[in-house]
Length: 324
Image 1: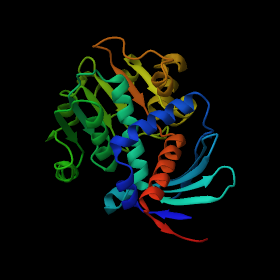
Image 2: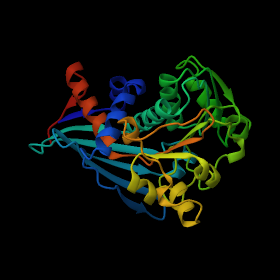
Image 3: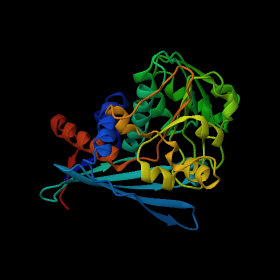
Image 4: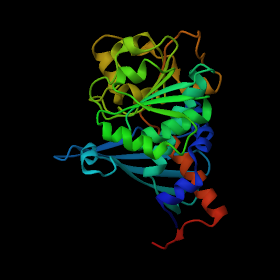
């Protein structure tokens, strides 16, 4: 078995290169080529954390499972909110091929998903970005947006200005973009053609009225029915795309909540982004249309990215061999 570290993952899979892999994962999932059961959550009480099990099989060569722990209280402890480990298997022999530290992998594939959405749904000329949240997910969302759209200015907002300042310091030399601290979410959102939410919020993090005409919104933070980042009004008026139809309606507060409140019906969503990427669904229909991509995370993304990391590690002689 090859053991691949967090540092190795960063070296082997830049966010810009993960965008195509994640789009491939979305297309394969929408075609039914990837077996991807809905993730199994294990609440860890009384700490308020959750352990998620996310298996997937590509139908051919690889299978794998990601175990990911989410502890919101870690933010106050200056520890990662998300920690993950991936086990990659040979699907024919069931041999465990690699044990991959997957906290960075999770951030990379989630950022890449935002990049896929921006490339397919944001206006081609979109050059302004707002990110609500200033953690690891925000970093990869910025890197992915810059890779697919001509971003010139980005506004960053976090409830804790110290987090915003730390984010700006970390990212200043990684992107050729003017980075601005925002005084409020309204300050950020009202100036942006692309809006990304990457928080653990339980109530919406911006007002629908703050959106410019033609804005694209990607929501990646809310992954349970008790969480919500995007306002009901935005969901109701937007062309809505999902990463996985069943999982999104079951897990995302933006969808489960608006459905329960009678704001929208299940047929409100245009469909899965994989079908859009595959040319089987229409995309943006006007320059003023609001579009939303709601992501709850898809195990197919992890599998394709983990397999790519494994292959690249073999080619570059990266990682440590271990026997179990």
